[in-house]
Length: 64
Image (tube, rainbow, N blue to C red):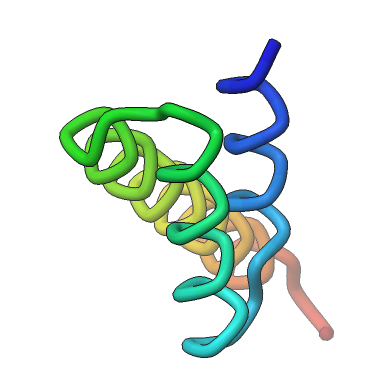
């Protein structure tokens, strides 16, 4: 349960300072640093794929 809260904090952090606070909170909740790093890497990948899909969708839409 603590890791789920930590993951939500990490996922919802939008800027540098929020991310630092989220990482500190995740550590205090007992989430290992390696798991935090893996989760942040996974989020970065997920967001990059979402951007690529959006770019591909807008490129294939004529007239927009």
